[in-house]
Length: 422
Image (cartoon, rainbow, N blue to C red; front, top):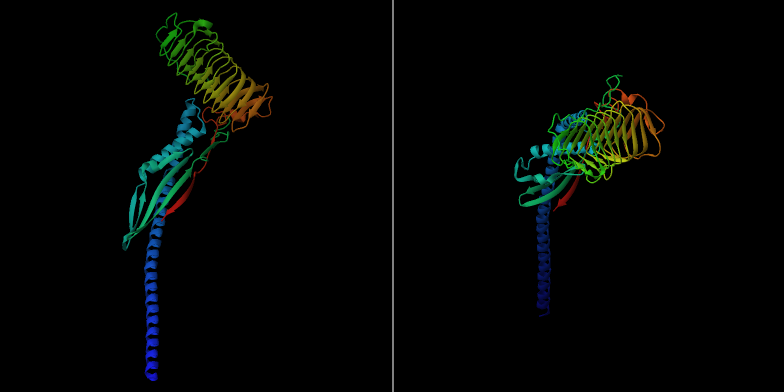
């Protein structure tokens, strides 16, 4: 009986051992199968990531190709527009031409970039999609932003990479004040004071009229307006064949109007000029310009000129042949002053993107503040901050009517940011 019991115990031990080994074997087999399955998932996911990255590279190259193939032609268009503006007596800040270049480049991107789905050769279930809308190509200040998704798909697994490409135009152009070309030593004739066209013969204004809003008319001979006349010019064209004199005209700004005076002009204080033009064949004496001074406006004087304190924004003053006296010039931005003789400036606080050209002796009596890229040129001056000499007044120089300050043209930079969306 003892022998039989021992055999029974041994059999039980063998069976237990076999059971344990079988459990372990099945466990290892299950884990191995699970690892194989997991590896297949990882491999598939890695393939979709690689496909999405391939799509990003593809679209980045497409963007760069559009940019490179249109870059020079767009610069040429901007140069042409700028040269035409200067020829027409319109002086704009560099930023406006940068924005023009951005608009032209965005048009090219929108017309030539396409949403794309590309399958990989030999793998019908592997592909990448480029997804974006026209609103995803837009301007942000001096940048162009192009935002798109690249979706890589392998069988039923996909990975999305969101990408933002930034094309920085801030270094596209900068004024260096030397003139784009030098066509020799021909003396420059500064603007002649004939940029504003004569409106021709107009209907005669009413004798008692002082409100010229939405009016086109002329006064034959000379005219004097007085303090209580409350002159108003808004969408007006007003011509005087003789001299025009009025006292303070500070009851209302002058807007979108042209004053064309064949004789001289004398004024008291005036309010702001907004998108307005004043032409005076003879001498002109202006009082203080209140408010914002001159904005998007032109004044051209054929004789001696005198200006009290003023501000200038995107505006131009021409004084042909004769001397000019200026009071305090404050906040001069994106503006030009040309005087084809000597000039006196009481004080000057010059802002950005501006130029003053005095084709004679410039005397600055008091302060001269210039913390920007603006330039002041004169044949000679009492102020060491003025750029002195004849060079600026030669054809192609900084004060050249045909070229204006020259532009250094740079290349916009392209960078990209990525966002992996697993």
